[in-house]
Image (tube, rainbow, N blue to C red; front, side):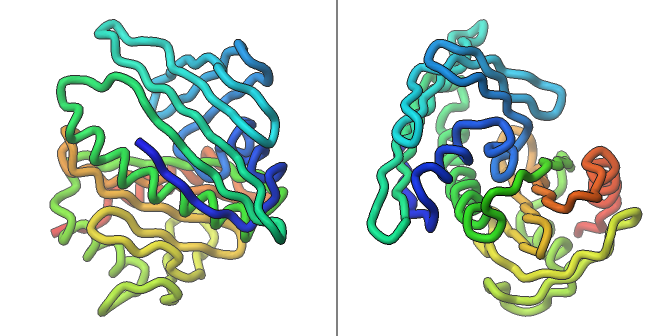
Amino acid sequence: MHKDIELEATPEQVWEAIATGPGIDSWFMGHTEVTPGEGSRGSFSMAGYTEQTTVTGWEPAKRFAFRSDPGPDGTFMAMEYLIEGRDQGSTVLRLVQSGVLGDNWETEYEAMQAGWTMYLSTLAAYLTHFPGRSGAPVAAFRPGAGDPDQVWAAVTSAFGISGTLAEGTSARLHVDGLPPIDGVVDLACLPTYFGVRTSDALYRFLHSGTDRGNALVLGHHLFADDQDPAQAEQAWQEWVTRLPIG
């Protein structure tokens, strides 16, 4: 699978975002640890699961590649990022993902295609609006949430949005135990994903209609210094669990 994106950032800024743990945590799901250098070990953790990785390519500001350890069934995933500087400080990032998927590979592949479009858009938002800062990842899940129409009607309604969803629309939400959220829609690609950007956070909502059974997945990135990620994650889990859907 190949994905390209042009980013308003220097190659050095892109490298920090895609090849360091704090950088990756600022736009991608879960928690990632990276040890510099080819042959070094790293890890990716999410929802109680940890995957070990090995760095297979390390050329700062040019190329970063890694491969996951194979599973008992032989499945594995390999990633390669290629960085190319352009005029006026912009950079083209090329992503190549390969590997061996499981028996349900067609559904997994489709989900990865949509997911990477969202995450690369989040990377662009991070580099544009929060350059040089590190975001704390916050995740929450609701398995069996419902079909896309039901889920997005509930989520957008909670944000006070009615009518056609479009980027730039004002979005406001109160989550118990957290500061009020007041921002704008910066991702609007229903029925798959939806995003809101504020002055100190990127909020991401993804509908996963795979073998997880129409799950609603929340993957946020908090940039405020005074926010407690653990408290925020608990608050968001309670919010999505109680969200009235259907």
